[in-house]
Length: 231
Ligand code: NAI
Image (tube, rainbow, N blue to C red):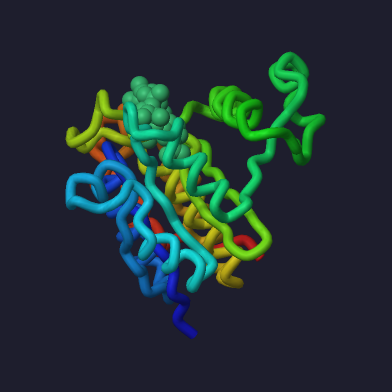
């Protein structure tokens, strides 16, 4: 069975990490048809609304969306296109109440529920605990739809330079696969990614390597042939 999922590549490093993620999912044989839609600056550049109705319709229809980071537009009438998107679909972010406890003993927490702003801050803190923003996936699960994304933003300082780490979006895509009932495919991608990062070669510069976004993704794809998914 093929699943149709809405795809918003996003702004800044969004298109590069999205292509990297799609190439790994294709190599893993994930049966997904991507319905590409625009939002944010890319939509505005093409003369559309920041959050076009056809993008909302696509998410509503497909119920699942993989989204690249969106740059927050300056003076656009509302604070964030991301907040507008989450509000539209009644999505809530997980959060925490004690940042200190999170630093001292993160393992005491399984799930943290909080309001959006605290969640935003604490998820960046948690990202710092596990190796940086390039490693932190996110998902907003609502009553009707689920939207998967990286925790990090559009990173304008490195956009267009083929140096962004695609791991966070790839891990978000793994959560999408699990929601679609494709847990085995997700496990293979995770195992390949883990092996590559542990090995330390062919990783992006935030992990101490010299590989570009696309080389990193290619290396993950190649490793897929040699990994057994944990049962
Ligand atoms: P950012 O997360 O884009 O960047 C912070 C730092 O982390 C930068 O030095 C960047 O180069 C680095 N970084 C981020 N992702 C990386 C990756 N995958 N690989 C390697 N390095 C990475 O945060 P910033 O600069 O505060 O925000 C930029 C724009 O993104 C703003 O317009 C902001 O509103 C938006 N944003 C969007 C989010 C979303 O779409 N969910 C979340 C956070 C910010």
